[in-house]
Length: 161
Image (cartoon, rainbow, N blue to C red; front, side, top):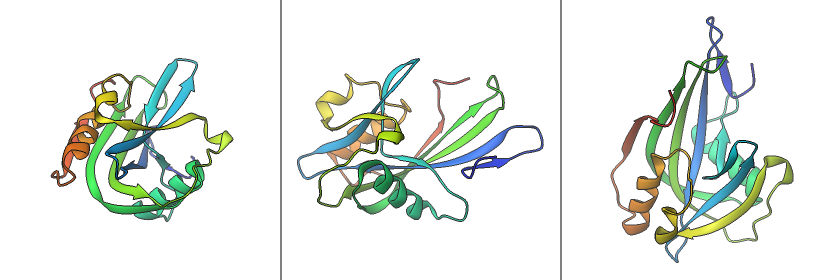
């Protein structure tokens, strides 16, 4: 099994993922565009946790790998999960979303990370983009309005089985 998943006897696995909702002082959030054969979508900077790594260490590493800058992590704002049964092997992915900011510096996208574009997005632009998971869009929108939102459990993502 990969370093970011835990193998289970029933051929399914558990994967822990971390993401940063990076906000800037202009009231924008950083999103990354991924273009895949099945379509284009936007995500937050982040990825799979490595074995032995804490959640905060994972966020810091992923932001550095994807963007070439460091980050400041303020707090955990949301947790959600993807549970699939129709895909082989079955998967259970738990996402931890942190609110924070990026350290000053020029963003340097890493070509092998599969990121087509990084863009700072305003609250008005969020509804025009496909942001995955869909459940995180409301959290982002609310954070852009008021950074003091309460922690949210997003539950099982509705876009999957």
